[in-house]
Image (cartoon, rainbow, N blue to C red; front, side, top):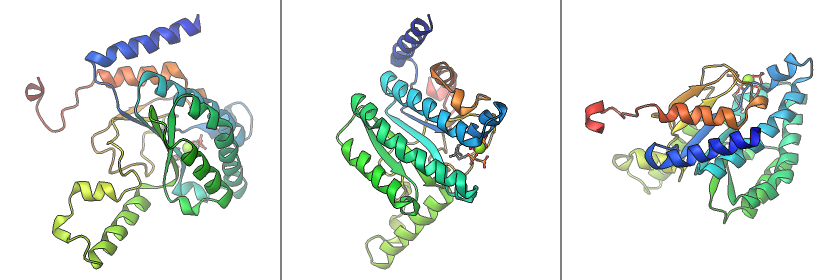
Length: 256
Ligand code: IPE
Ligand code: IPE
Ligand code: MG
């Protein structure tokens, strides 16, 4: 029964595709793992482990229904401040998930990409990540961007430094700096702007995520904790997005 409903929802979303706007780029702040575990009387890490199930189902479904870019906030620059044991376990979980999910990515023709200050990751994580990125580099159905050790302020600082260096070497003149030059120096270069930003767990803040890239994104907040996030919640978010009018500064009349 559940499968029939899910299938119907996929069909519905695919059919809507033609007439209704469909998000090309979905970004998700996967929040609430710790509270999910606490509610069950378990340790925070139990929530992170169960969060990986939501990651798998969301990635697979997004690829199936035709989302071209999915960006998942997995670890922020601020998350390094968490207790050492939690950080270590999260890094370990990342390595095992990358190993386990390589076949899933191949099966669904998904390319893995990573954004963030990747050099700050432990060597083991960096190596596994590079391996999966290389092994999926020719896949083309969907790009999955993992935001790891990612912070928007770090990204913008990095971007300004890179542009500054090029100015110093006379590769770019300051007059030539425009939005596209900035885009090309962000970790997200070559990715389209975010259309739909989802945050789970009831928090309504951005927590240093893609501040430049969400300038015109539609924001969607749900109370569901990340480990409980499944297809029905994704469809709800997409259906909600499809009801909105994106005006980009124009008037309604101009759009019609
Ligand atoms: C999101 O869940 C996962 C990461 C930030 C790594 P949290 O760990 O933030 O869970 P809460 O927000 O404390 O419930
Ligand atoms: C944002 O969640 C980072 C990730 C989901 C990876 P946090 O739980 O770290 O954000 P705050 O601290 O509640 O703003
Ligand atoms: Mg949180």
